[in-house]
Amino acid sequence: MAKSLRSKWKRKMRAEKRKKNAPKELARLKQALSLDKKGEAVMTDMQEIATVVPADKIKKQTDVVMAEVEGDDGKMDMDSKRNKKTQLDENGQYPAWMSQRQAKKLKGKRMAKKSGQAKKKKGIAW
Image (cartoon, rainbow, N blue to C red; front, side, top):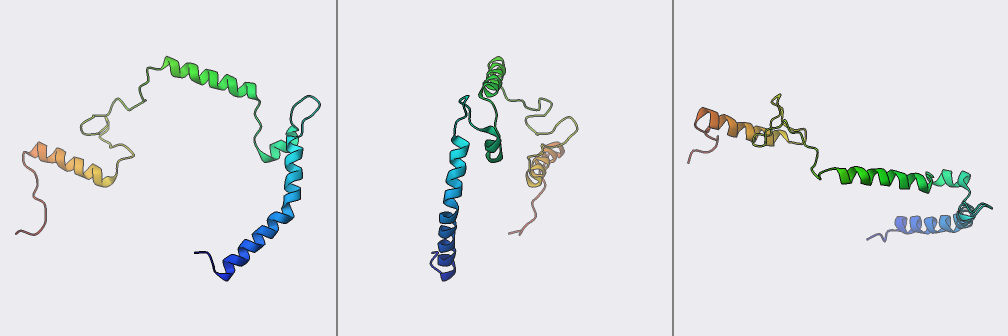
C-alpha cells in the first residue's frame, strides 16, 4: 500500500538518518557495555539509557513477594460485603466496572420480582 512518492521519500530519508546516526549509536552502545576494572558496567552513561537497579536488590524483592504468595490461600481480594445475586454493596451501589445499562437491567429484574409482575416493554403492539 505504501507506494506513494511521499512515503518513498520518507523511507529514503529515514534510511539516510539511520546511516548518519549509526556510528554514534554504536559508540554509545560499546561505551555502555564496556566493563570497568571492577567488572561492572559504567553506570553513569547507562542511567541515561535505562533505570539501573542492583541485582541483589531485585532478588531480595522477589524472595519477599514469593514468601507472601506462599502464605496466601490463593483467593482473590474481593469485596465481601457485596451481594452476589444483585451485585449491590451495603450502600446500594453497583460496582465501578458495571455499565449503566447493565445496572438498569438488574434493577428492572429486582423491581419486577418485588412488585410481582414484570413491566410491559414498550414497543409495537402486534
